[in-house]
Amino acid sequence: MPYSNQQDWFVIKDIDQITSPSLVIYPDRVTENIQRLIKMSDAVERLQPHIKTCKSPAAIRLLQAAGISKFKCATIAEAELLGICEAADVLLAYQPVGPNILRFVKLMLTFPKTSFSCLVDNLEIALLLSKIAQENKLIIAVYIDINVGMNRTGILPEHAYTLISNCLALPNLKLTGLHCYDGHIHDSSLDERRRKCESYTAKIDQLKAWADQRYSKNLSVIAGGTPTFPIHINNKDVVCSPGTFIFWDKGYQELFAEQDFLPAALVVTRIISIIDDNKLCLDLGHKSIASENELTRRAFFLNAPDASVISHSEEHLVIEIADGHSFALGDVIYALPYHICPTVALYDKAFTIIDNHTDGAWNITARQRKLTI
Image 1 (spheres, rainbow, N blue to C red):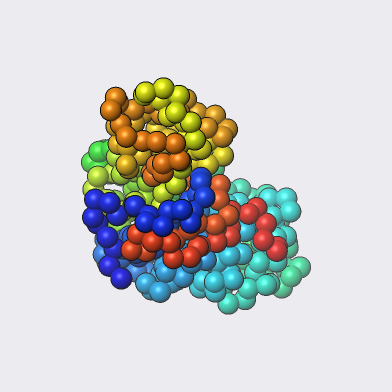
Image 2: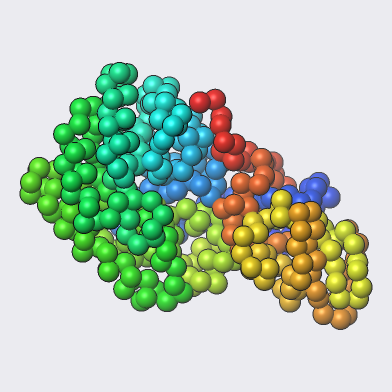
């Protein structure tokens, strides 16, 4: 069914069926976003979406139905969900430490149809993975996590040569490629994002060429997220892993105008108190919507676009609105989050909306820290 792009696409006619606050998802728009992503790529094989945004088996199956077979994730629970969905190729974009090393091995043993890999950025973890792989008669595939400027995880490109050599020498360890996440690049200007990407890609190319020349090893490269997707997709040697595209949000809508994805997930909230002629209180607290941004960048209200947030606490959000509004107690406000990923993680399910009516629900399965493994 084609998505609705009418001005009131978000209005839910049987809204009395939905409590507030609740997460609502519009599957037709999700499907459209997947198709738009694929159209931006020259080959579906170069797409490895991150499921940290959706965390849902229903969303994963829509991606698989569109021909996408490779995925990226950040938690063992997300990786387990992908195993349950029989995803062909899953990168745990995290270096496992402590008990998560054994959990990662258990993933591999539990879901043999899925090819799992993980990140390493130092020899200590590579040695541990090699040892446990030998003990379990497994081959563990790894990507070296490269620090390309975010300064969060990863090894600097100039220090990665030795780690590449060490990983290639370790038994039961298969060095598959390089992982380059550039989440620090989020300028509104596409040209500026491109310039910043180019500042590190030459170093990655040198690493690849060196590994190929010295070891006849053709390392794959997984790079970027949603902000730099339009740049990396033009490099045929790079696999891209956007995540936010699937639901989109107000933050990325404002920043990245060149990416024409559709908002596909909202939070339904209601007016629970009228403070005065201009101030309304909603049941949309910190526990209901991502709140790490400044006060003015937490939610945009589709049916109250001129409203501004003036205070926010655990269970309440207060907006200020112009004189003459017609809102009453119990009225529904449709909130488009500025940051959809952590918003989704606040809910265990989302109501699905088709043709302006409720049509079931999606489980947000991987919001849990642990499923069974």
